[in-house]
Image (cartoon, rainbow, N blue to C red; front, top):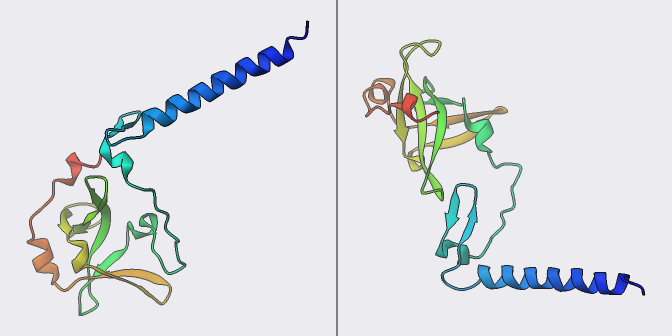
Amino acid sequence: MNLRPIAAGLVFSLLAGAAVAQTAAASGADAALTGPGITMGTAATIPLKYVNIQDTDLMTSRLIGIDIYNKQNETIGEISDVVIGDGKSVIGIVASVGGFLSIGESYVVLDPASVALAEVEGTWKAFVDTTKDDLSNAPKLDYSKLKK
């Protein structure tokens, strides 16, 4: 007796059952995607979209460490981090201000809409309409508690 057709049929029926079970569990308004440390409730019903990246786009990995300049082209800070609110969109840019060699610096969070990014002679720069004193006197962020 040849067991290959029986084994193949058994494997295909198990795979088909698993696929149907996954499809059924992932559909509907109350669907939830889960993984290590994440649960997506009804957000799982949002259609997936793709984005085409252009050569002129800036990746956050290159954004960290960019100097911040004012209208007088004076360096007034440096980008330290990017804040993403509710895991969806950029809501803030963390800027380090003051200090020397990371001693005595403080951090403020800038609204991304108030920061202009531009590539100047092959180097990315951030521009804001403020002075170094105003930036130093802005509300501080206790960044040491957040960057763990």
